[in-house]
Amino acid sequence: MSTLAKIYDDKKNTDTNITTRKTYLLGVDELYVENNYNIREIDQTHVEEFRDAFIAGEHVPPLAVKVTEKGIKIIDGHHRYYGAKLAQAAGYELRLECKDFVGSEADSVAFMVTSSQGRALLPLERAAAYQRLINQGLEPSEIATKVKRSITDVEQHLQLLTVGEPLIEMVKAGEVAATTAIAMQREHGVKASTVAQEQMQKAKAAGKKKLTKADAMPQFSAAKARRLLELLSVSDMDNVEDGAFALYVGKDRREEVLAIINEYREGMPQAFKEAEQPQQDCGDELPLTRQDILEQSGVETWACAIACFGLKPEYSFTESKYAHAWASDSVEAPEMMVVPADTITKALRLIKEHEDNLELKLWIADQFEEPDSEGTHFQRFSSVLIETRLDKPCTVQEFTALVKQTDRECWSNIRMLRQAVREVAGQMTIPDEGEAA
Image (cartoon, rainbow, N blue to C red):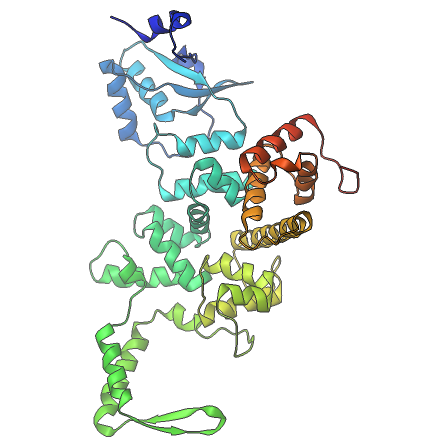
């Protein structure tokens, strides 16, 4: 019977492209686990499954390890390691197949996130892993590239960490789904935890153990809303000064109208009622769409809105007013408002990203005669900038200085541009912007 080893030995006489990658067999006691390094919480059931696999002699994928001053540290395969420890304690002698992990600390975290051998990550575990990469200096777009997820996925999980400690504890306890927690944070901002606790008390009183999205963010009856419109549509209207008008409801409809309105008011969480009446007065007319906020109120207010309520095409009046109040106070160190530190960090990061994008667009406009109306040039250079920063942290000016050292012939092809920048970055230092390229 032929084997891969035989094919490899005879590769000179065949057309095969077969290659080998070494793995090593190590004793269980030769490996060590660094405290709080694994992004997954240890699941004892999963550990016991690997124990049984080792005892039965089944195939178990190799562990990824890195040699450090302390010894051989496990990068990926913690459940397999603990399963092997249990098998060893049961009297079975075995050695673990291991392979070298090559890469930076950020690569290690990304590898643990994307590993197909590990238990599926819980939302808070994934969020913590993304935050660890943020703390190592990576941007959300860079994280998305490393973990092979969308930027939206990264932003949503990072937002999960800003919902407030009480709501995070509810997610950990399984009382609230992560998606519901994020939706509540977008709807209620810094009051999300208070609203969640109020709604959870109502759910428990009704005999429920988990706060569903419908319970957390109750929607008023569509039938009653339509009925209210029917009652008001036949009411008399009279203009008053300053363009306002008054509705006159007949006696036969008055009680029903008031009953529907009162029912709607009673169904609103108390924290939401307070949020509907913010103390800061920023004016009666505020831009509500994301683009209008950016154009009319500036990048700081735009960043505050996204940081608090997520990336949405349009914000409610309350959300827009909150963002304006925060920005008018101080984005970095607000004194009149209480803003979570993670939310402030996110706003500052968004401002920096916007400034970087603007600087890159201005540089592109100077380099090309035709306008970049479809944004193809920007997308190309922005993608290569993100990839470059994964290996070599740099500012936009430093990146464009690198690009200037490449052949302009490759600027219109992303693959050629990527390769050219890599070659220059690997062979030459980044000159100051004032130096000749």
